[in-house]
Image (cartoon, rainbow over all chains, first blue to last red; front, side):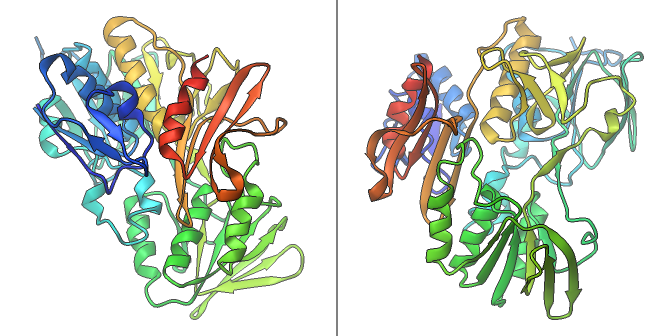
Length: 63
Length: 386
């Protein structure tokens, strides 16, 4: 899986960092920071959860 | 697996809530047929950017799409676009649309809500509303080259519109029957703060007034108010809320007073669920049944119903959430602030216009707001889990 984030769309809700803190963080403006764009298999489900819950739909997953 | 005769599951409304429900059903292992019916001639899109990035001209329409067409293929949906449900027959387990009669085993009502208009202004070209992508693009075009506008409604949408007008250098007048701006879920705690931004940006405010009449001339719109004054602008933008789309359910026997009444699993009647802006879910924690017109509730309700149908498992109740950007201020709101309780400042300082604040009733945090402090807001969200 490959993850892409759209920082123009990000609104800093922090849902991604809450459910998948090993993949996503926030910068000082609250905008998403990708810690890895290729999560290992055991974290793929967390990445999916983060993408679904993102209120700004700023996370795209390529399977 | 999928037989032609098997009616499967029917989702009425190609909204975020409806689409999320379909995704959740597939993720939770639902293998039967899923049919999605959408009234708009667009793929499902996100509404929050319409009054933000789209209105301000930063985004084009395609940037609001929720998922690409390929994703729909992956979900194995039968997607019927530009069709609309007209009637539900609960006894026969079927719905009638403009084009079809469709049977269902499980029905998801996700028909959303329609914008509320000012009576008598429906055919006025210079009176705009903002609910759909077409509304947003039409308004953006109408703002080109104008100098003045009237905004009816000082809620969050009206405030975002005023903010965009200010960016375009358009002089705004705002009218509201309430005596201050209203942000949802905030218990009125930030009314004077938002009003201050209005005044600092030269917005003329008319609060506590009713509209007596609206007239359209070639040059613009004039509105007569109950205090005897008149306001005018080259265009008017009406932002006075939405009405749940339940007309097609009038003969269904469902409780549709202010939305489709559902239990805490989203169940309105056996085999019938409702999600998103059209739904009024019971919250077992607060004991209230409310329509939650926000993006996150639409997502969470879609997820919960998909899981419940596929696995029989309930999801924990969640907190409403909205965000806004008004005059450059990034506002994040989780739960709801209690109007009767003073704010507890968790981080930062209101005088610096950067803070995280909460209201705490008998040791329980009812809501938490992040004001230009998104990172600290996220770190403080755990206060709501107690």
